[in-house]
Length: 146
Image: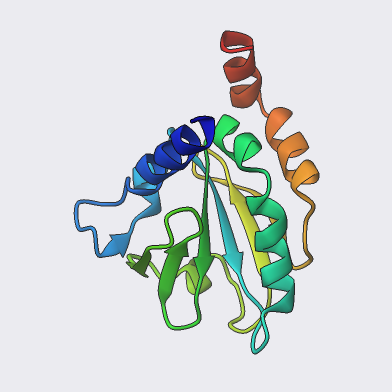
């Protein structure tokens, strides 16, 4: 039952796109969710796949921290790693975040819309969760909902 609730809540969180559901608009998440963007390495995506696998085994921690995760594809689409749905970019994330196509990158974007983590190496989920938990907004969330 809990797993079903987690899946449903992730589907709700990942459906908060712009007014035009064909496009991903990160501003729809501002002040509601933290965002992880995974830019996979091409052609085999080995680092990207490992990063995604390690994140997705921590669903409870992702939900607790209001995290949504997108895999950014080289053909200008984004896939929600929770719902599996694909969407077109509203913005060119490669340009916006100065990411070279074909190279691995992971970004953590805070609820305030600013980049909190930008790495071209795989990052352990615990490191991401520790970083988030040290943020003032997360500290406030934890004190309200222990």
